[in-house]
Length: 223
Image (tube, rainbow, N blue to C red):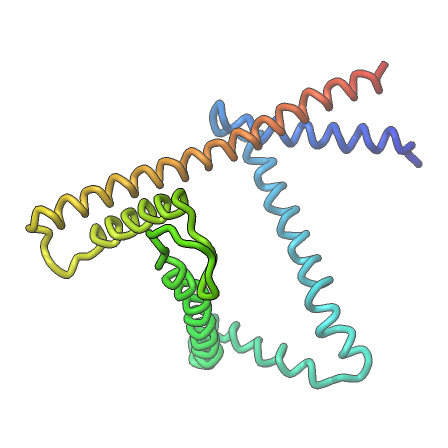
């Protein structure tokens, strides 16, 4: 039994429409229709993840070398099986070797990421608050940029004072500075939350537009 391309497109679009309506039905309340498609989505995503893992990692780095006679690639796989000894209490101690190695590698990668990400941020926080012309030491700083840098440095100092808990904030200057930092943080969090809400509404608008366009397209097909 064969289907025409138009029929396949219609069925795919129909499934997409039903799936979208099922997921959006949770806005009313959680129901069996939503849970069914939620489980379908998790299952499909898991299957797709396994396929991508095989295509991008295992096939190229394990199966193809092994099929061409590179038998030694099986050693890492056998060593990785030690992870499953955690399920056997008598041999659970074997899994600690791999876990400790992964923790060490993870700690090293985390420190490297911290050094390569945070240190440049600290360096870039030292901004010029005085307008200047371009020199060999740096680029030009206009009056507007200098004012913007002042606001940036003021915000940075206030927020840092708010998170400085080594002593009590009994001094009036420290207390007011920390309070200002708290308000600035609330403004930043509010702007971040607003951006998140806008992103969610963008997704909702895209789905509603898809439903309207799909309804129009399927209406033409069924005529």
